[in-house]
Image (cartoon, rainbow, N blue to C red; front, side, top):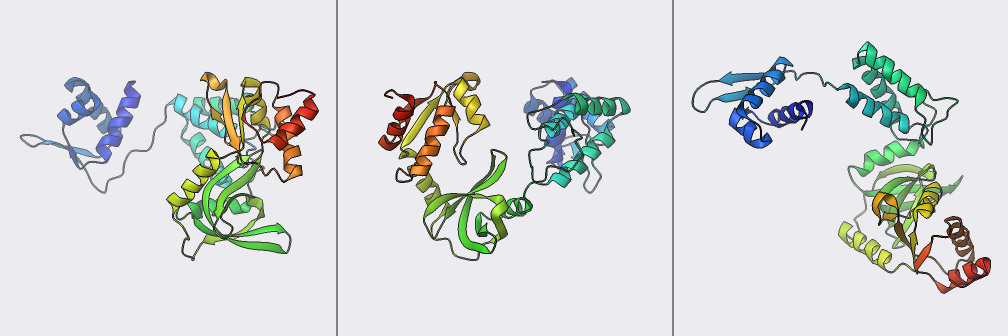
Length: 320
């Protein structure tokens, strides 16, 4: 373990204690007494509020109600945080305004040399979603749907929500739901919910939600019962597909909302997903046929409904 990493871990360890000894630090971090003393002295030099007491039962005490030292980042840590922000450009992230203020603070605590390096990184690094004509990290040009921040703030407190789903202007539906996930798929934010009234799982575009709030209704079933329903549904899926590396790359470019790809090979060389298709919906079957053909020749079917198989065999001119 590098010294800087070890010192940071020791700071976290002692910050949660009113009292500790050198022997405890030795035991916790498997280091020598001399190393433990050097690390504690360095932490004190950084301004960590410690006092010592000699004799039996002595050791170090953490002074209460004292200011802790400012957070310090190594040059590589600063680059890691900054690059993660660059990679998220044009990804319609929630709390976008906070990302801007955090970036400004990071630049503010960096030395002049580090600032120059960070600015240079912003100029030379381009990721998939970066607009090369406007790579400025501080521009607020990729805002997520306004409802997303509110939805996240509510969900971390309570997943039993009341949503108003506005499919068309002036045509809305109030829904009592249990929220499972909020995710971004194909550059669109979606929320996966269990709808209590219809006893089904649905994927709703966040931009079509209005006036989200914590539900005041009593839950008709428990969270564990909802998760069990989802697990049973996954096991009974009528379409199970295995993908090779080409299929995985194309899956990442385009896939229907709500499909979770599980990687089964090293370095993401193979994967598998499952879906429950409505075989009575001809439009849905046609869409999936087009999409499965787009995924390439490396697609293998662990399970496929006969109705979809017929469509694919007609398009391919051969049996699956």
